[in-house]
Every structure is written in structure tokens, then in C-alpha cells.
Length: 318
Image (tube, rainbow, N blue to C red; front, side, top):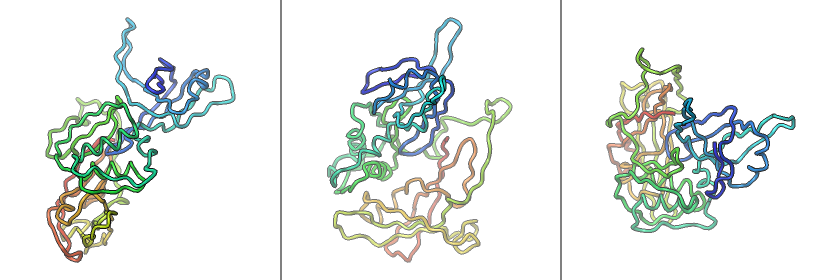
């Protein structure tokens, strides 16, 4: 593991006793690092606000040659050291670079660049908080931005913008900003969990949890520019054969969502609510966790005429 400050290497090949990198899917902070550094003498070296840790994992051959893969770029926010000699330095829940976007809130209300590509606006919002980074744009969206005003949360503004065009934005294992289309089940898998005798799966568990399962979605206008708001739009699971049918034993469990990125009912239902769990049945978690996002297929002008949702489930590793 190496440590950098303002792009400059300040500690190289830091000895590590143990560590874990947790990776989640979606837009925002994807990676968190827990690590124990065995060399107590680095306590003063790492006592600088803004230090970034870059751990690696790989193979060291008998010849001394190594093959290493970067695991991410993490901000050093919290560390502790034992008062006893040789206790080591403990780093807990160090987040990736997206945490800097979360902290860099707007000091005054900020406006969008009208007519700019939506993806470019996401890049602008993120790079103002984390300058000098590499950006990889894999999104196919050509949508442009309308008049938007943001109060404080830069992080939420960037996430809403990406979600409005069916994309996700995050920092990868090399610290680059990646913007890409949200993956769909209709696409060819790029990675498969193989639990067969020929696979390499060592352990796993299946969990059934209905605490974040919803069967009604209520969408409200989230604009703050003084425009006339459209009526609340409601979509529900109205399939009598569904286990989450609104008229069945499951009851009505609404999920509320609002965003300033869309200005009409029709455009609203072409969007995907962010991180909407459930999708008509209790989510099951295993080595690959499922994230379900309904793709709305109907349009209504009345808040009392529910829409029909066609679930499109996205599998993603956690």
C-alpha cells in the first residue's frame, strides 16, 4: 500500500497486517477500506489532512517479481494507534474519492448550465470537488440539461443528473471517474458466480429480506425554479397474481421519489428512480445481490390513475 498527498508519494510499500475492501454498486461511494498498518512510525507521516491510501493486491513470485492490482484510492479520514508499543495503526472505513463530492457542498445556490449535455454536467459537478482526475465516459446518453437550481447537496445533484439519463457515476479501482449506462439483464454478463464443481466459489449465503420491498411508487415534482409543478404520479403493482399485489396480504407499501431533473409527467416516467429496491418480491441476497429498478411503461395525467410498472431487475456484485 502507498500513501499520497496532493498527488505526491509520501510513503511507499507500507506494511499491512490485515485489511478489507468493501465494494458496493450504484452511484456514490462504492469502496471502503479497513486496514491495519504494522509500522507505528508512519503515524506522524500520515498525520496530514488530505492523505490518500492506495492499496494493492496480487502475487509475488520467488524471483521477486510482482503482479499487483489496485484496489482503489481512499481518503484517510479516521485512524487510531495503540498506546502500547507495536500496536499498529488502525484505519477504519476510509471512503473512496466520492466522499469528497459529498463534503463539497454548495455554499450558495448553484445553477445548471442550460443546454449542456447531462453527462458533462455530472463531470463538472464532480471535478469541481475532485480536480485533476481522469474521466472515462461510457454513457450513450445525448440528453441535455434544463434550468435547474441546487441548494446545498452537490452529491445529490450529481446522482440525480446521472439517474435522469439512466447512468451511474463512481470512482473505480484506479481512482478514475467512470460514467456508464446502468447495466440491464438483457445485456451479456461480464462476470459470473460459478458455484459448480468447476467454479471457484468458496462460500456464500442467501438472505430473504422484505424490509425494503415496495409495491407503490409516488413521484413528485422536485423543481425549485418556480415552475408550475405537475400533479403527483402514482404507479402500483396491480397484478392480482403478484405476491406484492396492492390489494393482497402484502398491503400498500409506498416509495416516495422526487427530482428536479424532469419537467413533465411523460418525461418523468421515462426515468428510473434511484436504488429502488424490491420490484414485486422480497429481495434475496447472496454472493451476487439483486438491485431492482422498475421501468415505467405507462403515462397518466391524474394522480388517481395508477400506472403499470414492468420490472427490470439488475444483478450487481456487492
